[in-house]
Image (cartoon, rainbow, N blue to C red; front, side, top):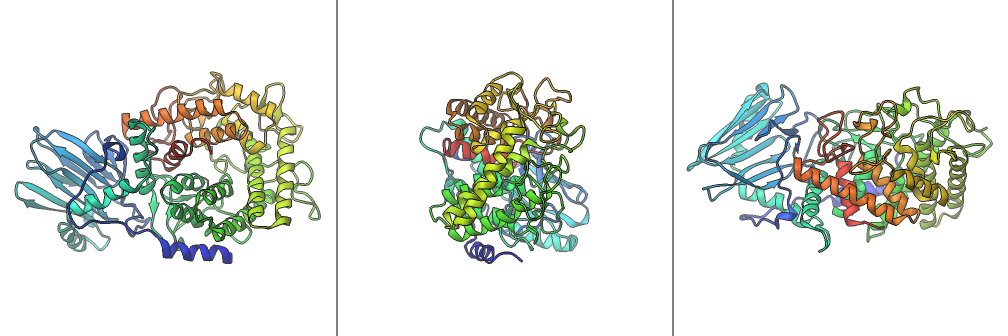
Length: 576
């Protein structure tokens, strides 16, 4: 059963859930730098749980495709909505958000508009000579059209009840006020943070896009998740991810701290009696694999950012974090578990993943020979989570718990510094036992002990030297795999740039007082995300080692919530 503190937080979330703001008529566009307006392939297009009811199934989610105005939907029979324009139509994009497209049309005093009005309905207004066509979709998807003077309107609706039901839904949608639709969607951007006066236009526009990505990847409550919850990408990933949600909260707290807390609470709701939290979960499915433990760190950051200093949320986060970290300490210990009468950190407390997927690094050459090794990243995550739980306990006035978690953090950090640091190479590596053979894989995981004082000052300085070398330096951040490693391809976990991992290292450098190195790395990351957005309109899961191109092994992973979240946090909280 969930803890009493958690249920109290859930109840508060349900009562305080935000409602969309809609105006009766008319609209005023916010300044251009406060609204995303770059069209490109791969942009996610869906109805947000912040505006109303959503469901995971069917995934009424589209991506822009084909270099034009084509929305490819990712559900049964993959319907495609295509907007065909006349030769004389020249468009100037005003809004390209993840649920609304608005473009001025040369010679027309009313803009072209396409947007979601509900989770299963897309409506649009088109200039004279333009038309909307539908291919695929079967009998559950219907498009209706209507002439309004020289212009036309359309409504595309899906309903599992069949074509007659879908047609009734579409007919009702044709009556929706386009002006009210625009106003409601623009209200979100008017209220989103825009940064201070020193934030230049290009990153400010990318920041607006980041908040749009956050919005589209929020689902409404759907049992057993009784609060708003998030996914890294509405397509193709769709489900809740425990590791990613920790990053999501860091971005959402700038938009709405209540929503950031909901995102974390939704993960706590999946926790099992023994403390295990599934890595992937959702209304219909959950799996036994775990994900890297970062939830306590995220929760404490959100708590500190929240002016309310919500003690009930902090207690719920502490309770969930305590159970999860103890589960890891018991179930992912490398080698033999300590005797029952001994502390969880007895002996040499190093820890190992069961699969590469648990580490969040599928396909990484780190795991080419299996997972039978003390993992530098998991050991570090647990050390930092223990330290974070110590800080939480201190704030909650739990002196005994604070001492216990502080001692665990000290012992884990000492084991990492002593046994996973290769002094000759000046780097942290995975290892086959406390004193066994070293892994020969140089990966981004070796930089993680920068966080919260796990590395010594000397170790941190040597790691900073590696960051500046060609071996790990990517245009936008740290390569996930060194260039000279076997298996390097420059894609995904084989050598691309992961912005969430780069973000963790930036924060680690700041913790170690290496602010100039942190600032340089953050500037590169922000510039690359910004440039990629202005080139392609997306915020990607991976970035190319050189330049600003996408380097995701799955080309479908665009508008990635963790990238959007860390980008926003770096801009709005550059030096916490």
